[in-house]
Amino acid sequence: MSETTIADPRFDLELQRARQTRALIVGPYLSPKAVYGADQASRPSAGAMMRSPDARLDEAIGLVAAIDVQVISSALVMLNQIRPATYIGTGKVEEIKALVEEHSIGLVMMDCALSPVQQRNLEKAFETKVIDRTGLILEIFGRRARTREGRLQVELAHLTYQKSRLVRSWTHLERQRGGFGFMGGPGESQIEIDRRLLQERMTRIERELEQVQRTRGLHRKKRQDVPYPVIALVGYTNAGKSSLFNRLTQADVLAQDLLFATLDPTLRGVKLPHGARVMLSDTVGFISDLPTMLVSAFRATLEEVTEADIILHVRDIAHEDSDAQSTDVETILRELGVDPHNHQRLIEVWNKSDLLREDDRLKTNNSLSRRPIDERPFLVSAVSGEGIAHLLEGIETRLAHGHAFFMIHVDATDGAALHWLYEHAHVLERNSNEDGSLDLRISISPDRIERLCHRFSDVRRMDAAS
Image (cartoon, rainbow, N blue to C red; front, side):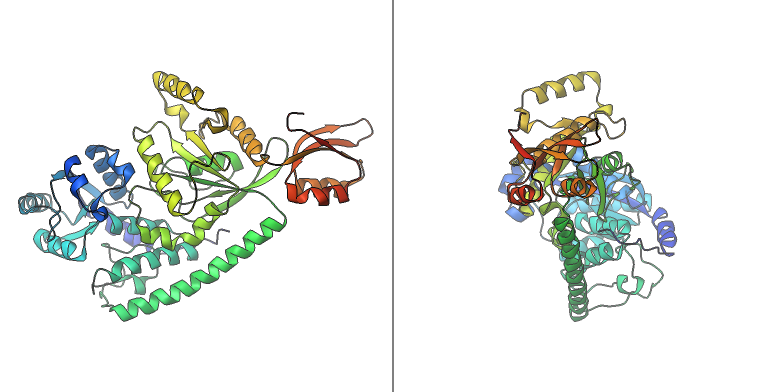
């Protein structure tokens, strides 16, 4: 369950510092030929390989803009090999150094995973702060986390990252808020933290997160006892999950055209067309080359996905890299132990239909029509509401898969019986009689049939098509 948001008066100071920082984004990408010759650790994700270098650089620019710095310039660097000392060749190092001096750059973001040695060497060469993709995503997550749990998870991930950076100056432990890397904070003394102190802090956080995980398990058990099916939203960052969440639940979760706008999980109740109630969970967005330490740190949060009855994979179908983004999401789902091709459990939702041009909409509809009905994605717009009713019906149908179907007669005065049915079964159809009694068509899981027959004497089994 989501926690109370923690306010931090120092956020404005950090935001002000960020807006004064001039940034240069460098996209050092292996050429297609070099990718196949590189070791596994150096290769980009399958989704990243599906994108053009320009598209990857554009995404990196968006990531940097998400922490409110001034993006002054960018540079695309195609590599035939990765240099152990500086990642890029000496000639490119000199070119970027010239750009840093020309534009008075205060931050260079390298859109790759740098080793501690590479990062240190580049900082010496550029004479300015350098962060890699992992450090930047950690910074964004730190800025977005608004609950104690979220901040603990981000801090654990950052400490894991920092531990591999040898012994560097560290300000976060005295600031106690989300932002970490280059922006500093009120504690400008740059406390030196050795590995022992880092490990002690990590151990304390892990204990606290274990408690959070136990609490989440208790909440989940209470929901299972009620029980309400859980529907989890997953998808690439900025695919429109929070907008869809708001449309389905009539809630007011932060939904912006912003990378990682949602970090802390949110749960809300939703009524399906025939009255059954489900819990909808909004989760952190995924991204290409998401640091494994973040997947590990957020495992307690992501359990809402692994334990969900139905998973909605929300895609920005209007995005030019929608297929590549989908590949990255599927990769992370596999890491979590979720089969992305289990069509009984996972439903693809093609969002942002309102942004499709007429010819693209025609191609999209043709693509949908060629898929088997039980594997067909739902084309929706969280903004306009197009396709939402159809999606809810689809969720209802998937939840009923494998269930048994019954007709139940409930007397007008038997409110307890009606309450029991709504809590333990899915009410698919409800018809009122003249005397006020109700005839209900329901679906129920096989393990609850015995309880149903014990609770109701007037039970008539039906087939699914009835």
